[in-house]
Length: 185
Image (tube, rainbow, N blue to C red; front, side, top):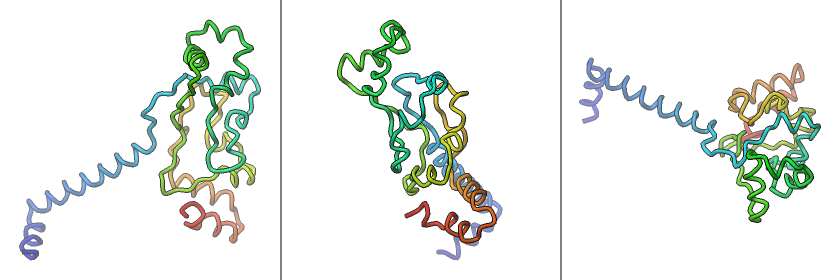
């Protein structure tokens, strides 16, 4: 039976079927990778990063977890309200209405994560900050961004390129930064 399958597979029709099956599997894999980089859920409020960064608010004020561990954290409604309760425009702006409603109802925002890595990657902000990287090295210049989006595809090749660049000519550092166990543990 297996012999008959291989005989069929090398026939012209078999080869066409194998090519079509291969293209299907490749397309499915590419679609899966593409989906990991998409943000299907809308944000609860169209947060203008450029405005807030332009006012001098530091990334770590809204994302304090970045200095301590794997998740940068997303701001709670009370964090936003700490400043916005003092701004008259908050009461009348249609863009800020979701925040005002959430505060009045005692609910919180459910932010949709923007910068995501696959489940099998154990990313931690702390060593990157300790190495002297700034948020904009990976997340882009937020002074030019209204609504946050991935400035690039965050995949293994992109990370490894940065790790190799950071290691420079230091062989020991290169081995440590490109070892699979550094990110996949």
